[in-house]
Length: 180
Image 1 (cartoon, rainbow, N blue to C red):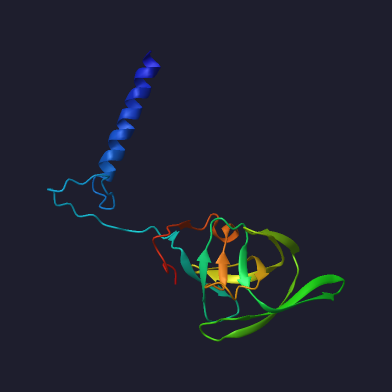
Image 2: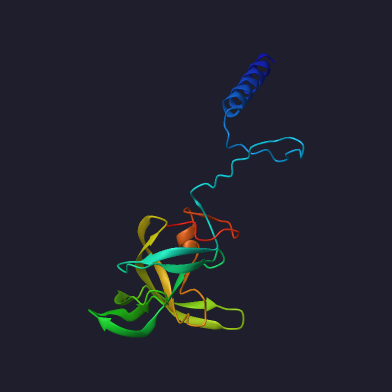
């Protein structure tokens, strides 16, 4: 019984201290604000919340691509032209060209093929080549996998999937272009 009283006292004290510490925090927003009460609500967005469309840099290119953020896609995808498979030192490689539609910047790439993947689409399945690309996304530079696709019919040349988003961002589809 004595242990229970001590535990309850500690929990109560912890709750009281945490409430006191948060009472001066102006970033706390009440769930319901009475209409007659003038309350200043500070609308701050945590740094890791991004929108439905964000810029991504495919390095070493200088101009960013607007990318559709797709939490349903496992792997990110990139619009590529002139895709040609070849062999180098007994390994499968691919050459391709990326052209930024907005800036006109064009760059030719050669990458080892990571794998050939089947992409499930609504009506059919598509085979794509997966490669690793260096990117800059939200100020962070890293290497990640992309499938190469013909995205001419799509508004956005790049699609950012969970392989980039996981552990990096939360998506709020009401926002757009939150990253630099």
